[in-house]
Image (cartoon, rainbow, N blue to C red; front, top):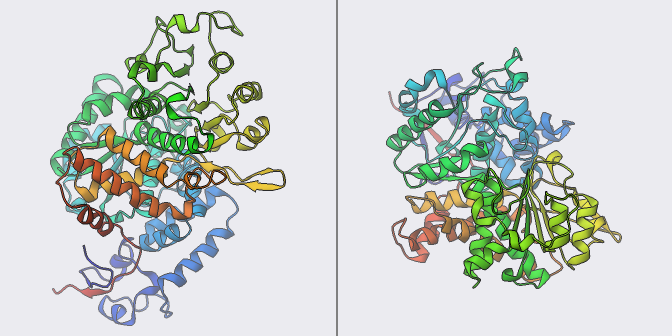
Length: 563
């Protein structure tokens, strides 16, 4: 790869150069570059450095009052000067992560039409379905290495945001770069605009998307097939991440395409890996073996079942038989605990149904329906995980009941944004008298306990997916396997501060997350090689391949292209 000190040959001049966010340096253009590229008069005379620019932009960012204002500021900066944006993100990741990702990206999607003003990524609308291959064929996309695609139907816990869902692919790929080190020029966000069933958007005069109810059924599947076929032909080695598709589509699209190209779904696999990795960290503290855990889950959709599947596999890896491992899961959905014979069970849920005989003697709050409180009271779970997007569903009664039966309850309210969390970290600590081990899907402030401020571990997918992407791209893996996500979970757990000190945090601090991503990437790349999904190299060469793909934000010198 080119080094930051290698000159870059540029054919653009003047406004054309300044309007390219990946090439613009603003006031950091040197005197020689201003001569060569006709920039005199277009820039103030001061010649600054990237570090000075970052300090100035950070001060400006902090002057805004609301997270959304800061989000909009950062989006504008990304469309003006990407190197400067990533200089800010890389060196202030703990402050920036909630602004470019959850929870603020949720409001960014809801208000996307208000702030959109410059092209970024591709809006592939249903009326233009016959043009998809033509659109992708443009030379500007020759260097694409990674794509994140959404259809905007299930944005976080906020539901259908139509074309505003583009905020998710943009945000995810920002973290590919800020955390995973993947060069931004190789990242392409795509929004599949198949209409929306959100009437507020359809009636909003400034809505930028296709004003039509959502396309479904065979026409929907044909549209996605057109995209995937065009992507696979255009970029045979590209990584394609599906993101924030509705539960009815997410799992089946993953199964349909995972053996055709290098693809994964972060809602299913990334969420599962970070939950499993955090649980593996937590058992270092509780002292209870993984094979002895009892898992209660609220929200048995694609993400929830993905979590169960990965933890089940970790239990099997630890020596538990498959039937016994499956019996340790209590998955609660909208109709209550999944029990054999229940109507409308989906195929993905069937491995995690409880036998009727196992619950026959339970005392129930409401005869005929087994709710979460019934599960907690009768099954006495050691772990409680929420991916329901229903705020407040981990009630005081439920948590206190769990805490009576478990000395160190492990509780993960993973729904996001923050307003959708099943419980707040402060309430969980209060209701368990400070004994709970907590991981949240969105950021929460430190919790005060006995005069001490205790940081709240964010069980955030950003610990996993940027590293997975880096490992896949660096190793040129042909597919993304479940084993590669298991490797990422175990790599994350190995970096847990609690592995060395039971009083320490479960998760590495966010200011170390770039190093975490490199460790995850190496583990993923090794697993890809072990499974025959990438060319085999020596461990030293593989590590160097990963490190060579980590981009550090810096301005390269430019020279004028002849002609």
